[in-house]
Length: 49
Image (tube, rainbow, N blue to C red; front, side, top):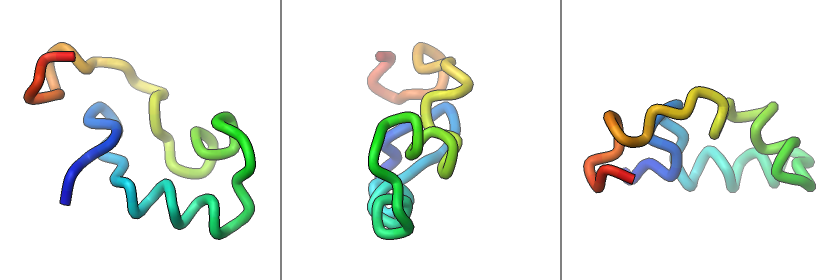
């Protein structure tokens, strides 16, 4: 399993699932998964970005 959004622990599967449940925009995906809502990538992403 690889996170797409480390800050909120959102995986590619979570994003695909949200799209399957009707997400059509980035805002829809954010609302449904919580992705990109708590930016702390410098500390939580192992790549540091």
